[in-house]
Structure formats: structure tokens, C-alpha cells
Length: 253
Ligand code: URA
Image 1 (cartoon, rainbow, N blue to C red):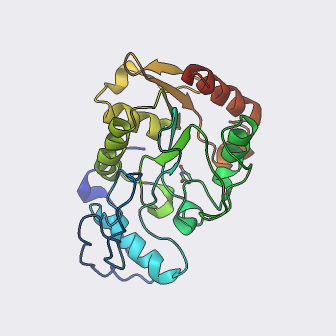
Image 2: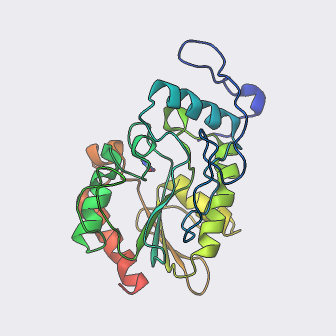
């Protein structure tokens, strides 16, 4: 994705051509639309569920919330084990998948190969992730996204990726059990390096590449398991299973 200056960026407008309505930001920790704070429980979210730091994304969520009142349409929390050995990092919620269901890679094609592979390797209790309340559990694995909010046309802007990186960073800091960070695609790979304060130029993205992040953690790269990559066979089920199995081996699973 090329870096563009603010002046060059297309102004975000609603499908009807109106600029989107401005919304008062929710208080930190409160829900984006109800303003209600969730009851405190075990800490499993390393982000602000009412975040409106990226104006374009917050506006897009508001529009989505109105267009699809039954959609989750909020920053999507990560999903899986509370003390995982492997942290899988995706790009951003899909419009009719994670953004609809409220669980990463759930409800659209992007999660098909991911959950099938996790199940085959004994890391998921089912081979399909249908909805946030389908009873599926992950073992030793957690899935998060480099960007928590659905971006227009599936493309977060560089500023949005940078802004959301603070959440990825805090998740990486808090999840002390993680031994392997599994990056789905280059944006996730770059996001992990930024969160770890490491120079991108020292760690080239490549499918199957392994990079020591420190003396305890390894970054493992994979092509993103998107519909495009799987249907063009840029990423085959065999390639994906091989690199995920290697991640398990490194993580001692
Ligand atoms: N859905 C997600 O949650 N993340 C992705 O990267 C793609 C689809």
C-alpha cells in the first residue's frame, strides 16, 4: 500500500454522497453506540471497545451500524485462549464477516482455511467459525487483527494502521505466554515489527519466514488466507498447514 499525504487522500463520503454525521466519541472503555461500560471481568481485551481515534473508520462504523443494525459494527475484539502460545495477527475485520459477527475471521470466506487448519492441528474445537456464540473454542491460540475496525474497501490507511498499533503492542506486552506471533500477510508482519520497535528493513516478509523477535519469541510469516489468495492458489491448504504446523513446533505444541 503506498503512503499518501492527507491532502491526496480521497475524502470519505457515504454511499449517498453526503459527508457522514459526526458522532460524540464514547467515554474510554464504553461501548461505541450505547455508551455503556461492559462489566469488569478477566482482562481479555487490550483495546478500547469505544475507540473513535480514526475519524474515517469511526464514521464508517456509524454508517455501517445504520445500514445494518444487526451487525456488530464495532472495533472487533481478539478471540481465543487467554494465555496463548501462538498469537495469530490478521489485517482487519471483513465487512460481512468479523464486522458482522464480532469475531475475527468469522462469518465470511476469509476464515474458512484458517479455522479448518486450526482444527486439523488440534488448536480449535470445530473446523468452522460461524458466529460469536457458536461454542467454538481455541486451544493455545488467539486471533487478533492489526486494525480493529472494518475499513472501507478492506483497505486501512497507513495512519489508521499506525494508530491501531498501540492496541497490538499492548496485547503483545500483556500476553506473556506467547512464543510465536503468526502474521497473516505483510501488513500484519509490519504491524508486529512496529509494535516490537524493530526495523522493518531487517526482517523481510516471506511466506514461511521465521524471525527471532527476542530470545523468547519468533515471528512466523504466512500469506494471508484471503479468498483471493486461496482461490488463485497463491496460498494452498498444504502451504498453510505446513507453516502453521511449524508455528506449533516452535511454540512447543
Ligand atoms: N477478517 C478478519 O478478522 N481479519 C482479516 O484479516 C480478514 C478477515
